[in-house]
Each structure stands twice: as C-alpha cells, then as structure tokens.
Image 1: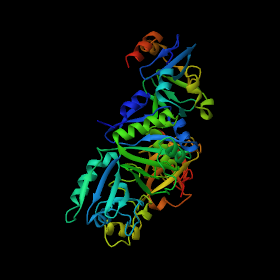
Image 2 (image 1 turned 180 degrees about the vertical axis):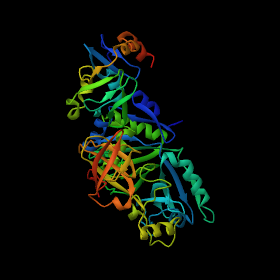
Image 3 (image 1 turned 90 degrees about the horizontal axis):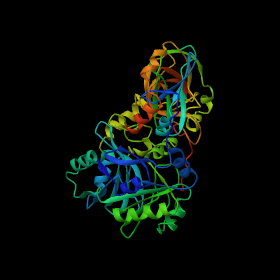
Image 4 (image 1 turned 180 degrees about the horizontal axis):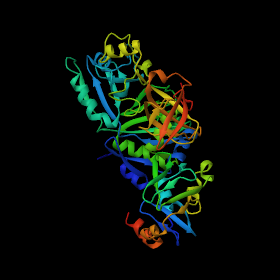
Length: 357
Length: 127
C-alpha cells in the first residue's frame, strides 16, 4: 500500500486511515459532518496527493490529447483547464480527468489514483505515431485542495500564493508550483501541485492557521451532493459518459477521438441505462449496489452512490437504471436490506454549486 | 474512551441486553457508537417481529456506512425506540440509555452465552 507525502501528518492528527485507490488515505479527522460543514461554510484542506499526474509535451502534444480525450481543447488559451474522459473504442470510460494547458503543446493531465497504472498503460499504448514526450509524474507531485468560501483568502494569506485573478478552471504557475481554481466539492477552491517538500510546508501552514483538515469521507459527501461523478461509481468501463449524463464533455463534432463512433451512436439511439438522481420519502439510506425496482417490484438497476445528505437532510442517491424510468418525477423503489422504500427520480444535483466563475 | 456498564449482557458484535423480568432491552454499546461515529439512521424491525439470537434484526448507519445489528437473544419485539426515528444521534449521546428494541425473551438461558461487563471490557481491549 502506498502512502502520500502527508501520511505521517495525518497519523499525528489522529485521522482514521483506510485504503483508497492503492493508498493509505485519511478518511476523517474531526468527523465527516464537521469537515463537510467546514468546506460548505468556511474552508477545509484535503490531501489529494494520491491523484496521478501525467505530462504531455512535444510537437504532437495537442493532437495526442485530442485523440485520447473526449472534450475539445482545440485553440485553447494557455492556462485553461478542461474536464472530460478517456474512453475505450466501445465508449466505456477508462477514466475521467482534467487537462491543464500549461503552454503551447504542453499539457498536464490529472487522473484518478485508483486508475494510475491502467491509465498510464492506456496512454502509452495510444501514443504510437505521435511525436510527444509522455511522462508519468505521479510519484513526484504532492497535491492539496483548499476548498470553501474562504479558500481564496486562505491561499493568498496563509500560503502566500497570489490566486485572486484565477477564474474557475484556470491555472497558473508560481515558480515550480502549479495553482488552479478547481476542486471536487461544489465550492470555490484551489488545488496546489508541487514537490512533496513544498506540499508538506503548505499543509503545516494551513493546519497552524486553523484550517480544518478534511478526509476522503467528506470529499465523497461533498462531491455527491452537487452531483459530481466518481469513477468506479457513476463512471466505469461499463458506464459511458453518455449514460452518466456527461455528454456535454463529449465533443462529437471533433474530427476524431477514441470512442467517438460508439458514443455518437449511443447518443443518437439513446443509452439503454442512465444515471439518475433518486429521492426517498423515508430516511433509510440507499447505498452503492442496492437494487432499484419499478413499482411492479422488478429490478431496473442499482444505486451507485447514496447518502442521507448533510446539507439538505434528505436520503438521496445516484443510480444506474433502465432509461425508460429515467424521466424526472418517475416513481421507483429501492430495496434496503429487507424492506422496499418508495422514491422518485430527481435531478442529480442535491445541493447547488457555488463556484466563482 | 468507551465505557462499559455493569449488569448488562454483551455480544461479540457489540450489542448489549439489559434484562428486566422477561424482557430484554437491546442496543449497541458505547464502544460500537464510538467506532461508528455519528449515527444518522437506525433501521428497526416492527413490533411483533421475531428476532433470533445471532441473526440480523436491523442496522445502524453512520454517514459513510451501514452496520448490521445482530440480536444477542431470541424473542418477540414488543416495542421499538421510536425516539430514534427522528433523533438517531441519541445513540451517540448515551448508547446504554437509548436502547433500540425491547424484546420478550423466549429463552433466558441464551443469556449464559453472552459476556458480562468485565469480559466485554477485556474483549474490546483485545479487539
């Protein structure tokens, strides 16, 4: 099991540690609820050093990224960031990722921890015929996410990193430090990528300044509430971006990318299954893998992520179900242990994002 | 630190039984509520349901996960703690005071298979 450069600090803070994506990661410090609320109301800091980073440079860098990535980066200004997916030929998802345009033909790709080995193999396999320098820098970079309404003030004043002028989904470098206005919480916030030593210093400064350390527990409740997908739950080799309702990140008018034909066909015909939101009338909590039933009691899919949400006090979930039931306000049921609970399909955003655009 | 209360019977899956006459009040121990964190939902059986020693009868849920409840004894549910429906966090406040179900015991000899406070305390220390 791998450890991040901040592991010893988590142990010293008394964090509950669990394996995630091949790393020993902090799940919570003070508890999921206070950490969640700190991010919604003030500011919190996450160790996200487990995330993978790949750099793509060289003459064909842009053409290569366009080949493996579903979003369209053609003509992007330096400093712009794009969210999208890498897909297989059949449209299934290899991973979802961020592409940072650091310079002309110079890209920084951020991938999920659990997928680093698989993604790296996929990227190399599909690099044939491209004149590029592809590097897996996952072992070099540490990463923290500072998230919440006070994030800008915190990054500027505690870390001394000027970031005010960054708009949502843009990046700048300060020496060797990469700072972007991004995150995975639905709040304003920043992510900082740098050497292990620098990231350790940042962490210490933030904790000393009283910023709440936040674990992966609340990272999941925060991203879930605003309807952001997690690879392995709402996206997978079997769940395409079209099924996940992420079609806006799949630019079918691009000349070419891996999976384009399959995704175009699926979009035109409509997918057989879709990710939806479901709200239960009861307080019982739907969890990953629980069956979703129609009103006749037949299984029509399963829960991908579910919680009793902290910000809105409701039992809600995202679920992958047969497309015929995906229309908003459709009556469905969820089996939770021995009982079946009624609910209805809703928008899969249970709390409004407050990004600074 | 987790506390253990004298006079109760304890199971290895961290439930307790408080016996009053032919009735047993079943809940989760203070050790269990500490391990779970904030309880946000308690899934309880219905009155008149049968519970069986060693078998699942419901669940307590924290934000992150559901944890099954196993009955330490057999019997018939005569009452469920309805306060937990709206305020499940009572379990975090006082797990021993806030029992989950009240059961009419069908076989009091089953209590002999459970641990007393001292044995349970040692069990938790070695967990």
